[in-house]
Length: 214
Image (cartoon, rainbow, N blue to C red; front, top):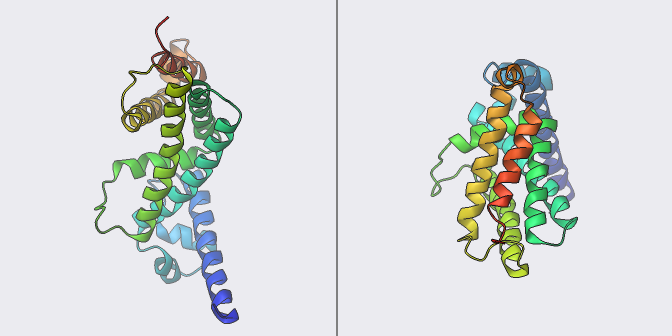
């Protein structure tokens, strides 16, 4: 690649990052539903037309943020796995990392929830959709390996089933609990329940189901 081509590519990547940064900031202050492409353009100090050069619509922008979110989540999961030896401890650490991620990065968590509601045509993916799919596969692969490792080291019951299926079930269960805890925080507090306690208890129940019988 020539020097000029490299500079152009760097400029494109910088502009794209600026737009994503602006979208995250607007979503954090105004909420995703209220956010518009005009607001993102103003926040990024770019023309509306230029924003549409990089992202064809709000859904495309959502997948762009989703890729960022999953890349960060993957690094958090990798760190969690590296701190533990047994497969069960790794899965438990991944669960705690996901809870912490949802609380530390609420915009990312919301965007991932919205991405999961989409069902793009896998035979004709847009670039940002494909990036989310590939990064999501890498995140789930970490869970697969921890589950399979747990079966091998004896910390996870051998009849747990297909690691790919179990990973999706665990992901869906914890994701739903985290969403419920956020959406019903005031109701739960009225009943004397704390959202973090609820999420931790849900994770404990999920991981106990993976343990070998005594």
